[in-house]
Image (cartoon, rainbow, N blue to C red; front, side):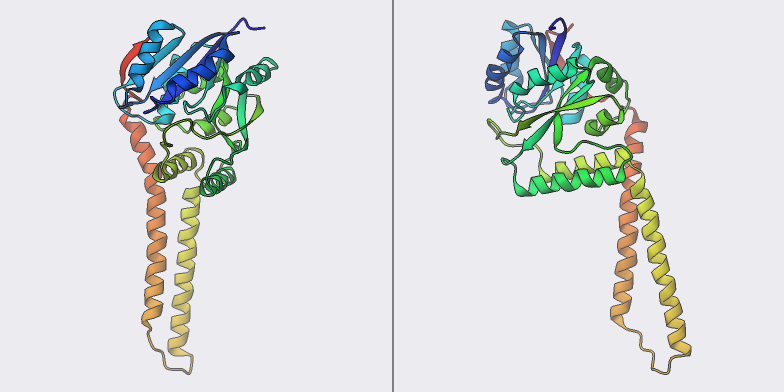
Length: 310
């Protein structure tokens, strides 16, 4: 049964060379459905918005939301969810690494009752060894810290039922970690599988620094265990210091050997205690920064224009 509206949400940032090839592949898979393709222009500076605007003037199923500047991929996705009107909403990237050929399978799983359908990577040979291993370590670490299990080898290519979309867009968080929030809702889920391809054009916008920030957002959004870890490290450092005091007193008064204060011991002790203190302050700072962003209550994004959107 195809009597439903399908929304495709695609965040874009400097993807002008991918827009036309993506639509050439994507639109044939949408012909049998009532659909809208919603691009969220996250402050592109390369003419991406102009290309989409030209297409949208000819095809009113193509829609565009543009930000004043770059607000980040996760914010762009949230904006797309808030403007999407579909009974089912599929989010995907514009670089053709998320294959449109998986969409009919995702819709079939949804019609069978799943509220969330993840597209899971079977193979990701196109990714570097470093990226694959860091992603593996990240998800294992996240699932060890968090009470909510986040599926591994999935990105933001997924289908959400309208009820799941309403839940997500009702959340007030200013630094959303969507992969965790989607799982946190507890909706029924299923999977389809695909082989990850190379980017059609351009380079990834996720540098190592952005990946680290993304990981920190995920960890601090879904677990307070790092704060407890800081407490444990403080107790551990204090225990070693206390044992050192006992050893020094015993050595001074009871051991029949000359007691010589060594620079090595002092240096190691200072470095150990200092390292623990800096790590602890850093962990606390990450949580305080999230509190700070929430307290400011600034808008999640600023709109520049909307095309084909009521």
